[in-house]
Image (cartoon, rainbow, N blue to C red; front, side):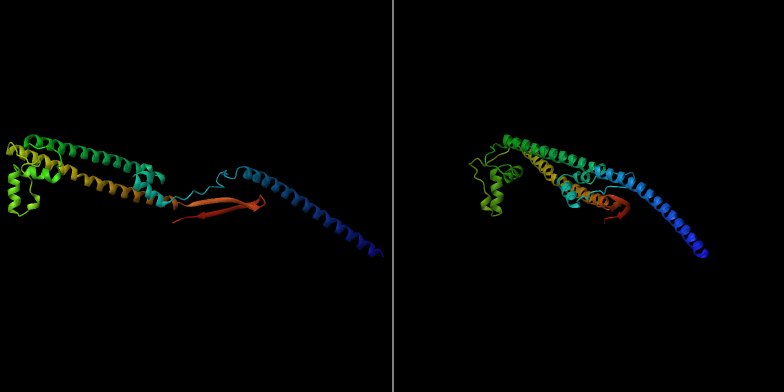
Length: 252
C-alpha cells in the first residue's frame, strides 16, 4: 500500500514537471511567432502599398528590354537617334553632327554648282547669240564645242548623223563672237558639272554615316539587354513573407 502511494506521488510530480516544461515551451513559441508575425505584417503592408518600392538592396526592378530593330530603323532615318534610344547619345551625337555637316556640304555644293552652270549659260547666250527656249544639256555641250551651227552640222554630216542636225535659220542656231569666249564657257560648264556630280560622293557619305550609326545602335542595344539582372523578392503565402527569392538572369 505504501509503495503504491509513493509511486502515485512520484508519477504526479513527473506529470506536473512535464506540463510545466510543455507550457513554458508553448509560451516561447507563441512569443516568437507573435513577434515574427508582427514584423511580417508591417513589411507586407509596406510592400502592398508600394509594390514598386525598392527595399534597399532587397529588391531591384528589372530593366525593360529594348529593340535592336527599332534602334537600327531610327539610325537609318536620322543618324544618332538609334544611339539616343539605346541610351548612348554621348556617341550618337557625333553621327548626328556628321549628318548635319554632310547636309550643309551637299546643299552648298548643289547651290554653287547650279549657280556656276546658270552663269555660264547666261554668258553663252550673250556671246553666242541665242535664247534659252527649248535648250537642253546636250545643246549647251554642243555650243561649248563648236563656234557656230554650221561647224556643228558639218561634223554631223561627216559622221552620217543626220538626225542630230540643227536648223541654222531657227532659234537653235548660234555663232560665237570669239573662240576665247567659247573656251571660257566650256570651262564654266565643265566646272559646274564636276561640282554637281561630286555631290554623289557626299550622298554616299550620308549612307555610310547611317550604316555606321545603325551598327552602333544595334551594338549598344545588345549591350544594354545583356546586362546582368539581379532581383531579390520577398516570397510567402497571402502577404506573409517567409524569406526572399534571389533571381539572377542574363540575356544574350
